[in-house]
Amino acid sequence: MNEKRVLVIDDEYQIVRVLKRSLDAHRYSVRTASDGEAGIELFRDFKPDLVITDLSMPGMDGIEVCRAIRRESEIPIIVLSVKGEERTKVEALDAGADDYITKPFGMNELLARVRAALRRQPSNDEDPVIEAGDFVLNLGEHQISFRGEELHLTPKEFELLAFMIQNNGRVLTHRVLLGKVWGGNYTEQTEYLRVFIGNIRKKIEPDPTDPRYILTEPWVGYRFIPKG
Image 1 (spheres, helix red, strand yellow):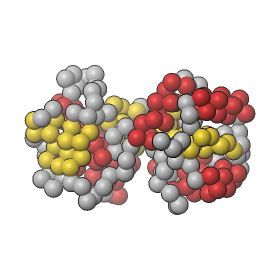
Image 2 (cartoon, rainbow, N blue to C red):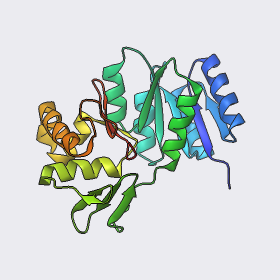
Image 3 (cartoon, helix red, strand yellow):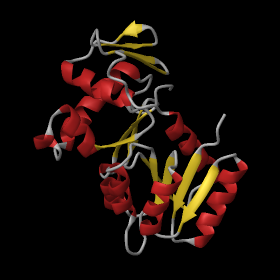
Image 4 (cartoon, rainbow, N blue to C red):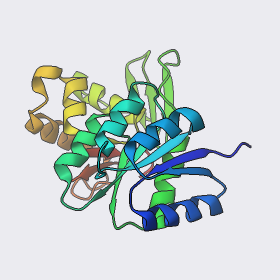
């Protein structure tokens, strides 16, 4: 099996050193850059399978890095952020990042996020059946099964849960979910999401007050975990 290539872009030398050492130890091929401009040049040359980028960098910041990569590629992007950057995190996710990790972080968490991002395959519209954990999404039949039983969902509940299943493990911002299910005119109507997420949780969660499948990312959005 070929080594997966990971590009790390961060202007903090100590973090880059620790990330490279840990990723090397887990048999990833790692290249590093200390700023956004150098990172994009290396991205084009190295052709990584995944990018980890800091958000706060002088010059070209992490949001611009995400936008630049997304103009050329759909590879997974994980952003690193410090506490208190909620608005910036949302902006980065809307710019194309797949996930974020807040500094300081544990290496086990980062490695788990890297594995999940690399495992995730883009949805294939030609294959109408997607199996994910306890769920089976049948796009052709417009049906979702949960632990072998068909879920009875309203049309909007189906659209919302289907989109989350197709993007399982990924942080989905309020804006992305609202735009996908309700359209661009509804991207600020977060109360829609609260109601519909609440309704779906009642149908799939053993305890809707302590969810295991649809997790809330405070101030940002939701993350769907298909195996509770």
